[in-house]
Amino acid sequence: MNAPEHPVPLLADSPLAALAWDNPFGRLPGTFYTRLPPTPLPEPYFVAASPAAASLIGLAPDSLRLPSAVLPLAGSALFDGADPLAAVYAGHQFGVYVPQLGDGRALLLGAVRGADGQLWELQLKGSGRTPYSRMGDGRAVLRSSIREFLCSEAMHALGIPTTRALAITGSDYPVFRENVETAAVVTRMAPSFVRFGSFEYFFWRQDHESLRRLADAVIDAFYPECRAAGQGAGPYLALLREVARRTARLIAGWQGVGFCHGVMNSDNMSILGLTIDYGPFGFLDGFDAGHVCNHSDTHGRYAYDQQPAIAHWNLYCLGQALIPLTEDVDATRAACDAFVDEYAGAIDAVMHAKLGLATVEPGDQALIARLMQLLHANRADWTLFWRGLSRLRAAGPDPEADAAVRDLFADRAAFDAWAADYRARLRREASHDAERAARMNRVNPRIVLRNHLAEIAIRKARGDGGKPRDFSEVERLLRALARPYDDDPEFDDYAAPPPDWASGLVLSCSS
Image (cartoon, rainbow, N blue to C red):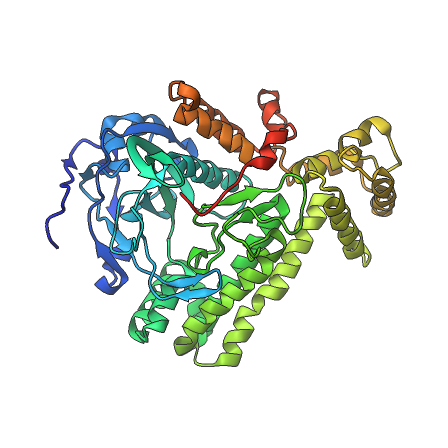
């Protein structure tokens, strides 16, 4: 490889150098990636770090504030053990196959094994151009980096499988999007960043040897139980079935907390069933089944109510890519279709838990469907509704207890009619109010990363209005999002209804 245009210094004293680094992905052949150094950012500074993520790899959070940590986390230095590379993949973007994508602004530094034996890959997002950048500049901006950092950690605390975020570093280096913004790098973590599109890349190039090698590496590292499926096609069909099931459970979890992923392209689908690539995303405020959180998605392909079908469609893209290994179209389709029953069972369990129902009755699906129609018709706030529902008493209406949830509906008579049937259902299983409320409050969060909360933190961090940069709101919001189910008065402001201006926030693929 030629000498880099911008040489990257090597630090001997970085706290990152003290970790036990490895790079299993880097032991795959060179057809899977390009090795290259990051492009340094000038005068980087510390923005935030996640104590929970740092603890996974044995790092003290305060150590990430040191210049010897900030420099490598910004891509402005390297350290012994780092082995930076950009992975190649392909994918279906908004339904159209793109034959080569890849890490256009991300570099995998390597992997670190945590105290529990879990291997965590660390990746810099926003570290400069790579051979896969196409027309991009390889950079990320502070705005989107804060959103990804906060949402990664928020989703973990909500119990949703996700990549994690270790830290954000920033720089005054200008980046051009709709407006001129400043650059940032988010360091994210996952056991693997392999995507559905990683397999599609080799399938469409008819490189079946690399396809098999990738599938074997994934099975051996993350799905060893699939080897019990025998020889030949068996392990690869078992892999596809398990990925389908994990993906189904992931989407059911998203639906339960009102999360919308704005770019569910097949290259943004993790082979481990993780939430990955937080670009435009959103948590529902007023419930709209057809809510689209990405204004670039002009046809609503990735609307909230389309997420399960799109996930299933993406699994067919993965299944098609694996056919040289699975060897049977019908068996491959059946493996993909494991998603259907798994999702049905998972979303049913999610909704029963959210309603505090401990048993299952034949009429429950109709009760749930009526509720969803009612929420949609009244644009009732998703998070406030479910949290408030725990206060309803099974015995009958109570104006004081009911107000928090009843007042979310313009059509109160329609809500009262549904609530009467819900109460009757609770009485049939002899539901105990206090016990049910405790269960419901463990699955219905009080705080989610609403767009306006992220926006307030972003504006303070950027120093909008000529004010000094202030990262304290990022840190405070991170602390609240780490305990989303707690009734903590310190964070009452985060649990309040969104302000009127929140409805005017617009998100796109620009980051």
